[in-house]
Image (cartoon, rainbow over all chains, first blue to last red; front, side):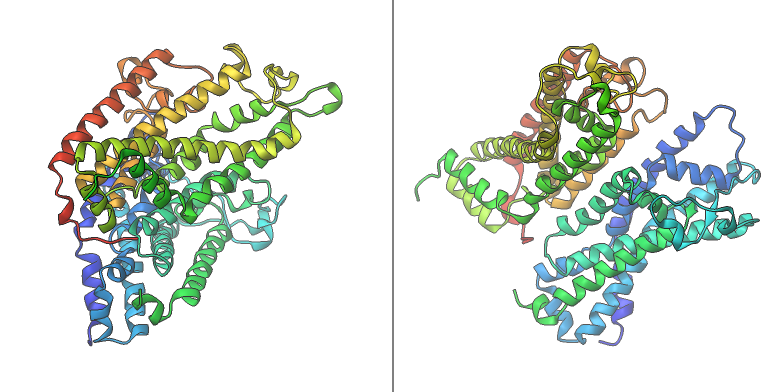
Amino acid sequence: MQNIYKEELSRALLNKRFFLVFLLAGISFIYGFFQVKAIPELSLGAITVWQEILKRGYYGFFACLMAVLPFADSLSVEKSQRFINYFLTRVKYPKYIRAKFVAVAVSGAAAVVLPAIILLIVCVLLYPSDPIQIPTLAFDAAELLPGQVISPGTVWENVSSLAYLALCIAFLILFGVLYAVLAMGISFQTKNSLIVFGFPFLCYSFGYYFIPSSRILQNFISTEAVLIPAGNLVSAAAQCLAAGLFFGICVLSSGKKERQVIK
Amino acid sequence: MKKMKFTAFLKYQSAYYFFRWRWLLPIVVGLSLGYWAQNVVSVLSMPVSNGLQGNALEAFIWAFGKPEIVYFVVSILYIYLLSDLLPENAYGQQVLLRLRSRKTWWLGKTSFVFLSTLVYAFLLMGSFFIPVLVKYPLSGEWSTAGLNNYGIGLGYSIKNGTPVQAFWSILSFLFVGWFAIGLLIQIVNLISQRRWMGFIGGVFLIVCASLGDIAGGAIGGNGINSFFLLQNHLEFTPLWAPMRIIPEIYSWLFWAIWILICLGLGFFVCKKASFFSIDRQED
């Protein structure tokens, strides 16, 4: 099978579940829009309004579901329905897993970033381009330690609006990839779609409360730090690293072909 | 073939669903929340030398009255645990044959959702009290820390009776709310014939409940809208508001109507459902 990548990508992207993805995103945006509208004497630029809608519409909660919806459970479904056997007679297992990984990551990123870009276009059409409020941004691992605060020396200064916009979009992509990969990692362990969908959401939801409330972890901001860039960006990098490690452990512990094929 | 008894059905359901690794999660979460709550109470009730002391029930009221914990931790976990009771797998379909009645089957499922809610609440709250009781006593009176303005800040509960009354109010609203949401999840699963659909539906409900009125505005909503907002019914006091927006009786009425609709709808859907067309095996 030569075109396993093409096959997996087309299955991931041309997928009816994207309707549900856009529906969930739409609900989050409507909520966010009304919350932003309620701010008295609103005079914000399009990019700031866009970020506020994402934040106040709890887009992260919807996005971690949206990222896994299109294709993240495909490995578990293919195992439970024995569809994986048909693939493995025609393609080598490592190649199949690599193709699956790419398709899951791309579909996760697309599911999170596409609705957000549509919202951005709407915001640009409806709101003036200025003023843009860029939050404090820094990148310093030492300042993640408990009791530390971001020192002025490590703050990124004069970040242009275009660079900030690019960073916001990159974070949305990263968020989609992170949660989709987390779901794929767990699908090495189970054939149950519910666990595959539920696990990333539980991680996001628990982290959303526990990280900022903890005295030790509070410098990691929250799980929302991967969605919306603000504060110390090492927090987002650390969360991505944790997800990558989790995926690696899942692959190493249960990623062998025999374990996936033999029931 | 001998007809399966209702109690045997419940026994089979309990043995099949409760003895899974994921049912250990409420214990882990309960222990973490308990540890957290006793720490918070000890920090907020300082200095001890002034005679300020906490009470285990106050720690409970603080934790389970906190919207972040109610929405993003305990309700989400409940939905995760309850979302795969339906649709039945191949063995479950055979059990339905043995029961010989779809009505009994749905009644059994409803009873099992109730039982699961009971078990979930027991595991979560039982493990919550383990670390709390190590440090604080159970008392029917408010502690000086609880009553103090700069203390634990239990707001509305203090003005409306004893800690025991507040404990039962919070617990009963959460319990009935979870049970009602659990029933709705089963119906979504039954209609969609997919387990993850119920999960997404439940999660959507909880996230929207924490967001409140779609048009924004005050916590708990305004006017007639406030009677339909889930945050006014699932919690004793909605979100961070230090008071109830609507009288308690309306919340009971809201959940009673919700449960009755779900029961009726469940009977209707399970009569029409084609169980044997399901070929998915997801265990």
